[in-house]
Image 1 (cartoon, rainbow, N blue to C red):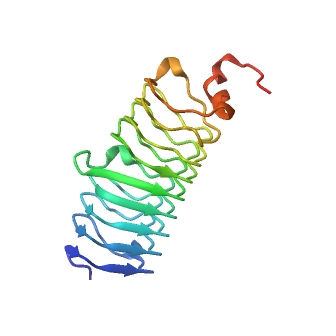
Image 2 (cartoon, one colour):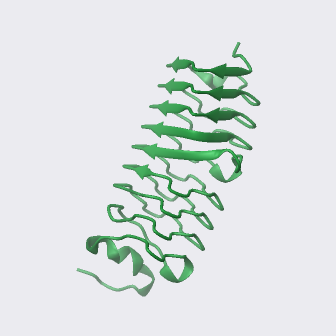
Length: 190
């Protein structure tokens, strides 16, 4: 049975799907090749933790705290970040699968999304000030009434953003991906 609080532990190839880990606390822990799919992580706090090659698809994230948490090569499909604890939330993603994730109204200032698949995710009303989507695929993702000021899209792929519906002052784009800002005009850019 898992302790209510875990500090400075390494969990390798652990299957959490058979355990109730709601209302737990993990601090300075590493999770490597662990399975959390569809787990109830409600009211659980992860502080200064890292997840490497883990499956967190469809977890219950109600009031879950992710403070200074790094996700690398993780599956986070369908994860609803909008219901996580807003006061304990600071994350980064590298080579992760975030398809169908929900970031509605989430504060994501300076968040790094590096080499991620973020297909059909919802960033409506999210604060992405100075965030970065380096080498990330944003096919079908929604940016509506979002703060995209100083956000870096220079190496992002397949995004479709309406500048009239978002705050975009200082957002960064490269010449080759400007078509993602003109989709609503149905122009043919060659």
